[in-house]
Length: 84
Image (cartoon, rainbow, N blue to C red; front, side):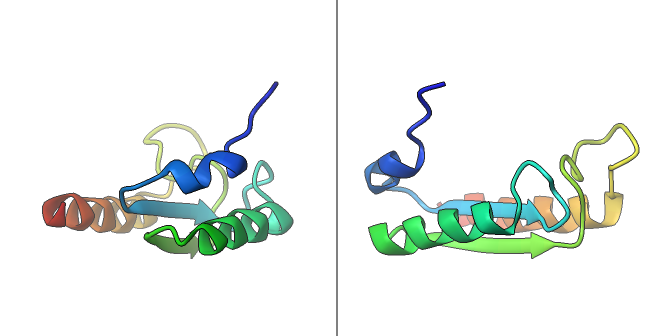
């Protein structure tokens, strides 16, 4: 894939919300640090939340679903959208 998402971060002009699971094997610590650093370097306006959860913890099906954490993250997202 020619995914250049990190290179395109400077093109983002709205607020970003990052809700990430610390136990997500798809985005390990090194990847999270790289994303965070790129957003900081670009001056991106963002919120960053890491929770003790696996990949897809907010998807309301499957064994990784964590309803309490999902509800918290939905609340953060709704608050952001209400401000926008």
